[in-house]
Every structure is written in C-alpha cells, then in structure tokens.
Length: 185
Image (cartoon, rainbow, N blue to C red; front, side, top):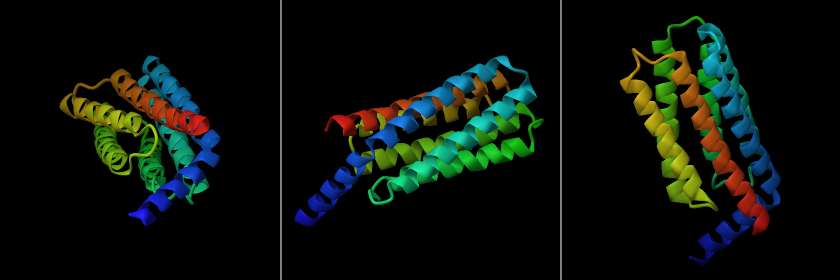
C-alpha cells in the first residue's frame, strides 16, 4: 500500500509542476467550444468544416498535453485517447465536408459515446484532483451522443454544432478546474 501511495504522490507532484498546461488546455478547449457554437449559424457544409477544424485542433492540443506530462502517466491516456478520437473524426469530416448531416451525426455519436464513457470510467478509477468535473463531462458527452443517435435522421447542423460546442466547453471546464486545483495545492 505504501508503494501505491508513493506513486500517487510522485504523480501529483509532477502534475503540480504542469498546472499551467492543464489550465491553458482547458481555456483553449472552452474557447474552441464557443467557436463551435458559432458554427450553428453558418451554412451546413461550412459548419462541417468548422466542426472538423475544432475537433482536429482540440484533439492535437489534448495529445500534446498528454505527452507534456508523460511522467504523470496515471492520466495521460485520458487526454491521449480522447484527443486521438477527436483528430480521427475531424479528419474524416474534413475529407468529406459535404456529407449528409445524418452521417456527421453518426460519427459524432460514436465519438461522444465512446469518449464520454471513457472519460467517466477513467475519472472514477484514477480520481485525480477535480475528477468530478471529468466524470460530469463524460456523462454530458454520453448524453449528447445518445441525443444525436436518437435524432440522427433529423439532427440539423445547428444541433450538431451545439453538441460539439457543449462537449468542448465542459471538457475545457474540467481541464481548467484540474489546472486551477493543482496551482492552489
């Protein structure tokens, strides 16, 4: 038991040194979420390009942040896995920006459901500082995925952009809360 406590202590010390990276990632994800909300007012093919761009940029930032704190490996897979999913879906959407809204909704449904469940489970298992925000973000992402799935044939680009925006806003809040908590500890 002592060894596990030592590993957690070392991991938290490493995370504490990188509090600014977590806070910056959270702020950027929040801003990207707000930008995605703006996409709901743009034409449908332009909205797909905006959504794809937001997904790719946010995914890249999450992957980069995962490698920046590789020593605190207990949570690195959270940012890495979700970031890679964001990048993959973003690239797929950029390759086919004129695809029907139901196909976009299907891809985002899978992203939100897998990413949301993953965030919720990992947050519960690791219980790093402010893990409740990550768990909430995962639940919200899963609910958005279910809503997109249920209304897949009728989902407009506006609702899709709203879902992406809310997903990133709450992911940004979770990362910011972690960074802020690490700074104050």
